[in-house]
Length: 268
Image (cartoon, rainbow, N blue to C red; front, side, top):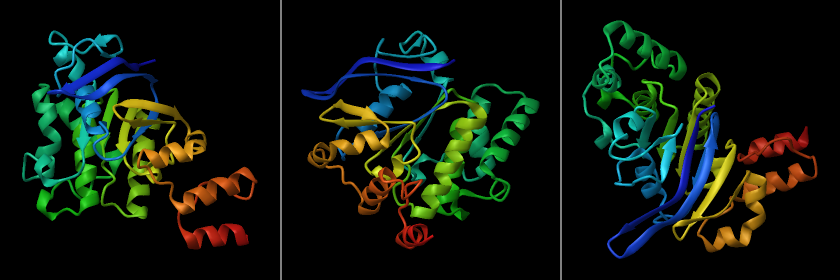
């Protein structure tokens, strides 16, 4: 079983210590959410895990330690998507964008065709493969970025605030796609966010503040620290809070964020 391990990870920028002794271990398959307010170190953590930041000997995937010697081997096990914006695209055409990492890895035409077919089936890309990036809406662009990140079948997918700007329906569509990737390909997803709504389907949540992990657990466990969450700048949405309380009394069997859906569920 594959794992990613982070042991006493530290990162400073000038005199400012951004990350302080970040330590956790994740096994495949898992969906891990890292939540915190803006400027708490979430993006820095993703950059460190992806190998963008110069970190030595604190991170390992399947015992492949991230260092100068192993960086290429380590990077093949990683896929990463930062918050969706046009600056992340290198090409005009979708198919060129998705095939680019495969070209870098010297895939044969046969292997490239198989890889693209695999990611196409997983993310339902038939309607966009032949299009240009400027023709896509935000959800389609995000799916292309996800496809580009996982087309080479990494063990770990890193996501940095990818749900920003998505409405509830599209957020759920993307989360269900991610859950399908985990189920069918058996990978680890580590996703950062500033909203508890994005953590509903997580296997575990890490709450980060002041450069360190304050506490972790499932959503119900996290919400017990409501006062601390508030001090860290993390709001508990009203509908989420209500859903979880109703679950406690066995009046609901899931978290509901839509008011009409909540009324229908309680009425039934």
